[in-house]
Image 1: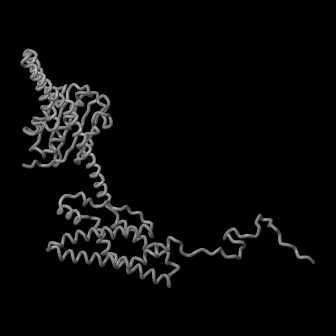
Image 2 (image 1 turned 90 degrees about the vertical axis):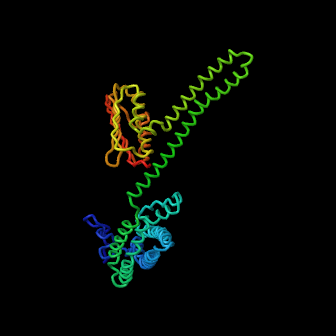
Image 3 (image 1 turned 180 degrees about the vertical axis):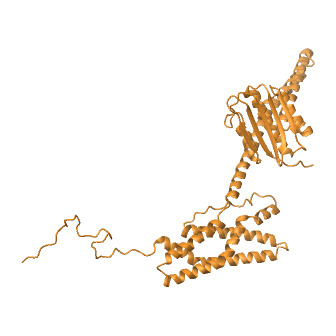
Length: 405
């Protein structure tokens, strides 16, 4: 009697395999898989390395604090401490690289100290001594020794005794390591933002100064210098004709006299554009009144200051109002305007209003963007409120600095 073959398929639509466990049959085990993946092994390696790294960091931090503190009364104490803080920055860089490689923590590198661009030796020394990145790295190294011992011993024992739960322990301890790296070795967001602002502002100041120098050179070349060259040539020709044609020579001297007057006027205008004498001698009130008198619309000037600010701040305030009143004359179509200057706490406030057509914008091509950049370069603010149809109100803030004698 011939035995029946097993059916190729079952009437319930299955073929004898158990799809619940993915095996070839209901009595077979799933294929073997590694108990620890690559990510877990990286965390374990990081935790085992914590002990030697923590010991070396603790010894460095202890040596720096004890030696630097003991020698601060000597001439080499502070320079030695500054160098140690720079060295701590390098230890922090290595620790961030280890966390990035083994823990996957992406921590941005702090900006380097601008020691090379610093002033004198004392200024560079003070810059290194107050470096928050170096001090936070020393704190990180000082508190890591107990944690390094705990993580090393826990992982080492768990490899032989608690290996089934070691991945969970490693993940929990690695997360605490990630938190410490982010909290103590990451750069300060506010500090980095301020450094970026100062670097940008410095570039704006350099570009503005270069543009001003080019403008002065162009004005001299095209204006007063050209007139003085023509004057020299005219006087030379008059000298040659003095004996043979006195009348023509006299006419040429008269013409040269007119050229001298025009050249002097252009030089005065150029000097007023660099730094007007009335501002130096009499302050903002008189200088702004002088600007207002040249505006094409009536301008009311109100200056309420208890004292004169620093020369640099006073000059920026003057040229800001001057540029704004030029815009009023050229673009606003206003009938009246007003300028107010006052002090609030440690800020110098400027406000220029007009009843013109409005529509002024920072990107409108009327010099507003340049004014905003100049004020931003000295930690100031520039706000334009100019709806279509007017009125236009421009408010500027400058830091107040007392005038030195």
